[in-house]
Amino acid sequence: MTLAIGAQAAEFISRRDFAAYLPDRTVKRYLDDGKLHLVSGAPSFPYPTWFVWRNDISPEILMHIDAALIEIVKGIDTEMDEVFERLKRFALTLNQNSLPSNQQNADWERNF
Image 1 (cartoon, rainbow, N blue to C red):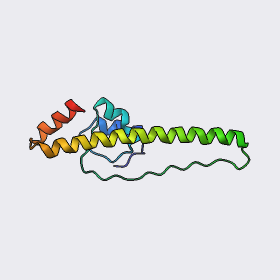
Image 2: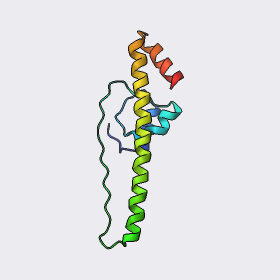
Image 3: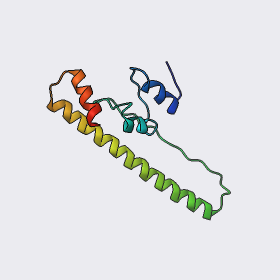
Image 4: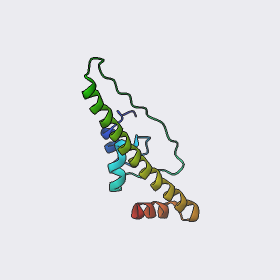
């Protein structure tokens, strides 16, 4: 099945016993709410973002756009760091415990 990247796909996956590769920015609230969880060892895929604007924009407006984009990127970087830190803690938990998989899932849901 193919769904558009975004909230629709995250909502669909969160209501079923499925797995998916979704951009972290679209699933952050589901991770925070415990509706989705990270999978230890899953590959990471870069998802570049491009910004395009017209050549005739005034330098003053362009300066504000540039400052806003820098702040947005800083926020995204902070959120990504938080997600990766959670994944590291989860991976360490799995490596330190030899619990059955159902117990690991219960521990994950309780702790994260």
